Length: 217
Image (cartoon, rainbow, N blue to C red; front, side, top):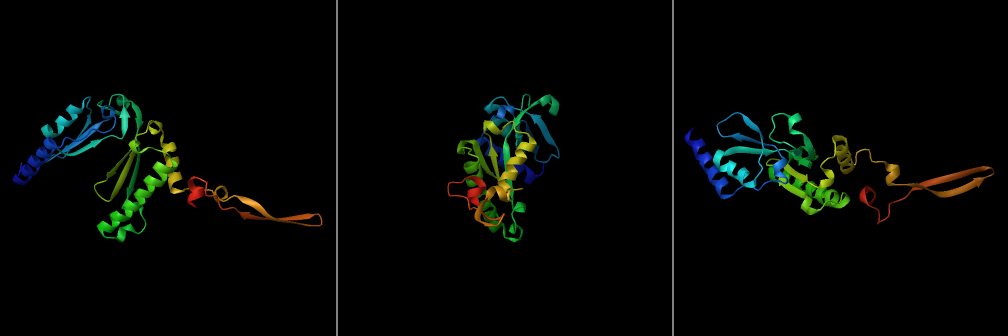
């Protein structure tokens, strides 16, 4: 191990000893994976049944990167997905600068500020607002690069399948939003000419008591 790599490894080990990483929600049902300094492989299919075992792993093995699954498994340490037996998964929203129009040409601080603005809207207006999740059911984290992640661990979302999760994303992004639903048409003028009746219609602005996209528009 080079002197520089040895220096970094020792300081990471010191950090892990002094600041044990907190376990994620339901950590005993998650698969963990690690990368190590000076190594080019990923060690997968690990699981921990005790918080202490997970926290002891860090200063003893000193990983350079640590990952855990968003999914929960009956046997998270099993070597194959079939043997793991899927139980559910967090609902995760990943908002990155690549998703924000015009953010690509900004400086890094301005880019993050723009992403943060949209992320706050996602959390306040949709996750806490329209969808009604509680603050204790959300975990908000910096991605480490160009954006932020919101992890929803509410019991109601754990067993949602991919198409159901897509429906939630489509709602938040307004995909295929029906203008006839948002702004209902009602007769605003009627006039009869002999046996012919002419009806003019106008769209109604949603009331202030409307919820969701009706109020937002």
